Image (cartoon, rainbow, N blue to C red; front, side, top):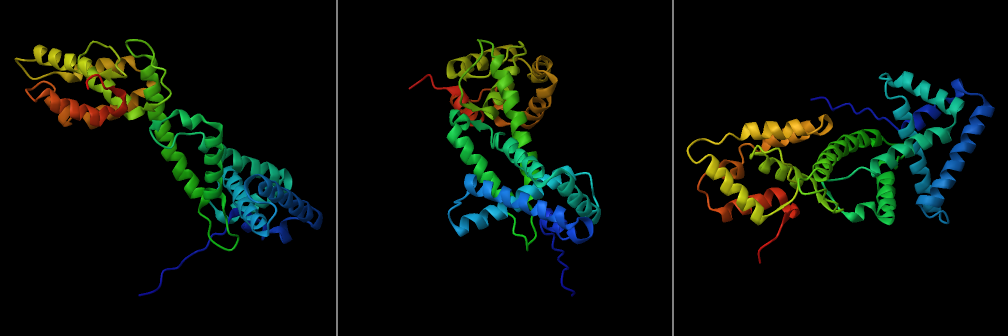
Length: 298
């Protein structure tokens, strides 16, 4: 059996620099080296210990990754690596390494501003926490050894996709909170999945009311009303969900519709209209709603 062929792909900046002899003159090469040195000094000051050799070395690795990330973004439509490398050195010479680095750093900054999961708390907006999160992302994605394959661009794309999905869920939940039937909910802490789950559970009533937070008493009322309404036949929850979706704007509709599909066959929905003990239903609701279910009983 033949061994697998491993193709190394150093950071884009390194691959571009290798083309300098045929793509840039001595003056352009010197200017690029000066720019990269300046970026490294800035990164050392802001993100590492600029007083030590180790700090400078780490800053150099971050500079390589930061510039490479910017190049990958600017050359995203270029599928041929060789052509892309030539375009990269052209960009660095014509536009400057600092502009490319700032592009890469902007990507990290925007990524850090997105929620990591659907449990968002007041501390997420804290400046100290935000700065720490930014630094951790920058180090994780942009640390690039010039002699090794770098996967920072792929990791960035993976995290971007994941966080965009989370952000869509959080924004849908925030919209539901703003349109809560009893007035907007302004609590900075939010369990986005819990908010959406509650809206779906209470959506079975078909009244068009949006419920983004509730208590056990209100849930008991819902169960009693549902069982009274459909005591002689199979419940029709679909029409209620259709009314809920009709009230939700397009940017958030797909998220709620997707959750309806996933909750449709859950034990909680199945047992809303039958004789399952209320205590058991409350436990199921807690699993869905989490902190969005207010405790009203000792």
